[in-house]
Amino acid sequence: MIINGRTRPTAVIGWPVAQSLSPVMHNAAYEALGLNWACLPLGVPDQHALLAFTEAARRLPFVGFNVTMPYKQAMLELCDETATLAQLAGAVNTVHCVDGRLIGYNTDGRGLLESLENDASVNPAGRSVVILGAGGAAGAALTAFILGRASSITIVNRTAERAEELLARVHNNLRNTAASAMPLDLSAAPAIRDADLIVNATPTGMSASDPSPIPMEWLHEGQVVLDMVYQRPETALLRAATLAGARPVSGLGMLVAQGALAIDIWMGEGSGEGRAPRDVMRAAAAAALEEQCAPAGGDGL
Ligand code: NAP
Image (cartoon, rainbow, N blue to C red; front, side):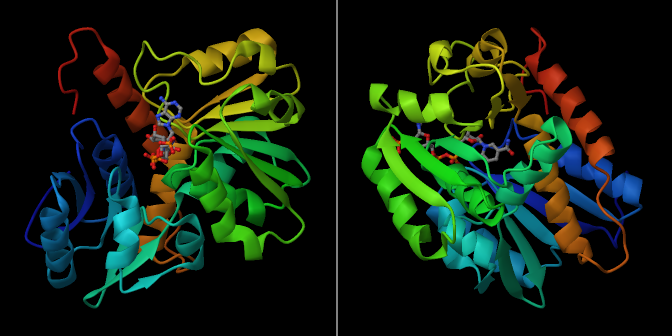
């Protein structure tokens, strides 16, 4: 990658961002596409820094930026305009900088659908789905599955009230999808046993010692289990899914797809510029992840 006077910046902002795979994935895509862009990880330690960065992004030649934990919800309020999907999800993970204005999108939900299609040949239409978690990623999954015409969606969360709040936000957009919320305890077992598709949208699994968020006994053959956690190829949940005969899907495909969809937006979807190269991005992310997971690995990126 050559950085010169005409290079335009993009960024991933969050706290912490040292382990983010976005810079390596994005820079590989820019190079393959011949774009004179460069992606930087920018650690934003607090709300003051977030406000300062968004003001700078309005005035400097940023193409756009990605937003990661813990600022996806806060970013919704800081954009000048937000796409309907981001409003329904209650979170912005992609910002396009256009003539001093910040336009917010959420590509997590569409990334999830793209990964399910590419990695497991699954279309959620007519399927019963369980989402574990009720945070930003769960909100994005919920909106994606409503748009994808799932027959039923159950939000299962440690704090049941948060699951209820999430459902209340999309209540008027449910169309023909039945939706319910329940706590992450034994009462969720029947819904999980009946589900065609189970998506983990909690951080459980990020640490190698984390247990599966649900017992293996609740899973069975014929189900697809996608773990949004992508830090390791096989989390305890994916191991449980495999042992139970269900189909495990790692969150890496979703990570790549949400990043690729952000680049598509920045290039101008439908502009004839082509699509971000998912294969190049996946190879770059997988290589960086392997380096991070290596025993002598340090900071990795
Ligand atoms: P978030 O807004 O902080 O929400 C986290 C959710 O997980 C909350 O509902 C929380 O429950 C629940 N939770 C947290 N710790 C838990 C535990 N020990 N046991 C059970 N439930 C627990 O986070 P987020 O932004 O939605 O992200 C969630 C995960 O998805 C993260 O690991 C993130 O890296 C991953 N993610 C992956 C992708 C991808 O592309 N693969 C994209 C987005 C996010 P309470 O409400 O009870 O606190």
